[in-house]
Amino acid sequence: MIGGVIAVAVLGAGAGAYALYGDGTAGDSRTQTTAADQKPKIKTGPLSATEVTTTAQRFLTAWQQGKVTTAAAATDDSTAAAALLTGYTKDAHIKDVTLTPGTRTGDKVPFSVKGTVSYQGVSKPLTYDSALTVVRDTKDGKPRVAWHSSVVHPDLKDGDELVTGEAGTPPVKALDRDGGELTKAKYPSLGPVLDGLREKYGKTAGGRAGVELRVVRGKASKKDELSDKTLLELSKGTPGTVKTTLSPAMQAAAEEQVAKRPRASVVALRPSTGEILAVANSSHGFNTAFQGSLAPGSTMKVITSSLLIDKGLASADKPHPCPKYFTYGGWKFQNDDKFQIKGGTFKASFARSCNTAFISQAPKLKNDDLTKQAQQVFGLGMNNWAIGVPSFDGSVPVQSAAQMAASLIGQGGVRMNPLNMASVSATVRTGEFHQPYLVSPKVDNRKLATASRTMSASTLSQLRELMSYTAAYGTAAEAMSGVGGDVGAKTGSAEVDGQKKPNGWFTAYRGDLAAAGVVQAGGHGGDTAGPIVASLLKMGG
Figure (tube, helix red, strand yellow):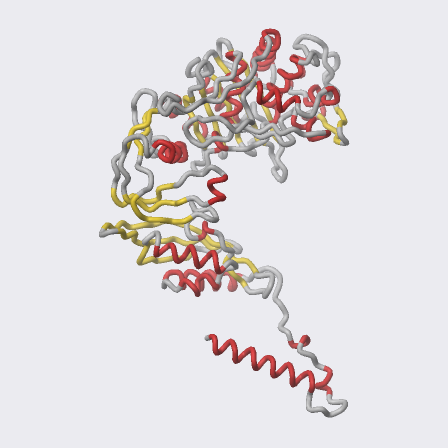
C-alpha cells in the first residue's frame, strides 16, 4: 500500500513536470498547463446518503474485524480513535464484537454492539446501542466519521477510557434514612448519586472490590465532577454500607413527579438541619439537580431582595418603582409582557416578579454587592460545599454595567441548580444557612460550609413576608394552592440563548421542608416546576 502511494506520488510529479515544460516546442499548447491546474477539486457541500452509509460501513466493518488502523483512518481524528479502539480490546477486554448499523437519519447512523467481556476466566455478554455522525473533511473533502469517544460507547466523554479489571473502588450499599436499600432499579434518578457515593466512600465503607467493566474518567470529565461508572459487573465485590439522609417516600414521590415532564429536576431538604430528603431528574444521565449550572431567573430575586432591604433600597410595604422599561449599562430591560405597576409597593413587585423593580436599583449598588450577599448570607458561590457526592455550589460572579444589572434578576453570569435554590428557601425559613448534605458529616468528620453572617431580624421578617405573599397572591399562588401552613415561594423564568421557551424555576418552603425545581425549556416556573415542588411540600413540613 505504501509502495502504491509512492508510485502515485512519483507519477503525479512526473506528469506535473511534463505538463509544465512540454517538449520544448514553442507555441505548444501543453506549455500553458500548470501542475496547479491539475489539482483535483476538493469536494464541498452536503454529504450524499451513499457517502454517509459507505463511510459508516467502512468504519464499522474495520472495527468489527479488529483492523484498528483502518477503522481509525476512517475518522477525522485517527490518533484518538486508534488509542480508544486499541484499548477497547486491550484494556476493556471486549472480544467477538458484532456491529450492526441501523437506519440512517441525515448524517447520523445508529448501530448496535454485541460482544463478550472476558477477564481471568470470567466472561459476560455485552450489548448496547451507539451512533456515529459522518462529516466532510474540510482539507480533502472526503467523508469521515466525526470522532468522539461516545462513538465507542455513549457513556464515554472525550478523554475517558473503558477498563475491565478489579474495580479500584469497592461497591457500596447505599441506605435511605430508614435503613432501606437505595437502588437504581427502584429509584432511576439515583444512578449518578450512587456512583458518587461509591467513589467517595467505597474505600472506607468496609467493602471489597469485584471485577467489572467501567468508564474511567479523564481530565475533562473530572473537571465536570463526573464519577467513574460501572457498565458491566463480571464478579460481585462485597459492598460496604453508607447511610444517606434520603426519605424513601419523598424520593419515590420526586421520581414520580419529574417523570411527568422532560428535563425536570427537583431537590427537597430539611431547613433546620440541611438534610437532603429527595433528589430527582427526568434525565438519568447527568445529575442536574446537584450539578447543574443554569441561570436561575427570578428565583434569584429572593437573594437580591435581601440585599436591597439590607441596604435600605427597598421595604416590603413601601412604594417601589416598577416601570415598563429601565435602561442600565446600555441595555434596555423590560418586564414579562411589558407590564408596569403604578404606585405599587415592593411586595407587589416581588409577588408579580417585576424585573425593573430590581434593575432600577442597580445604579445604587456596587459591582460586588450581590456576590457578597450570596456568599456571606446564603453560603453560595464559594466552592466549599461537602454534601457527600459531587455538587455545584452556585456562582454569583462580580460583574459590571448591564451584566451586573442582569444578575439581580438571575440572568447575566449567575448560575444555580435546584439544590442551591432549595437551600436559599431553607435559609429564609430558618434565618441562617445550613449547608445541605446527603451523608452525615459524622460519617467521615468532614467540615460543612458555613455563612459568615445572617440577615437582620427586620430583613428576614420582610423577606418571609414577600415569599408568603407571593405564595398566596402572586405568581406562585396557583401552584401553592392547597399547600397550607407556614409557606413561602418564588417563581422564575430564565431566558436561554437559542431556546424558544425559558427554563421554568420554582423555590418554596413549608414548615421544616424546602424544595426547588427547574424544568428546562418548560416555560413559566409557576406552571412547570411549581406543581412538582408543591407536591413534595404537601408531604410534610
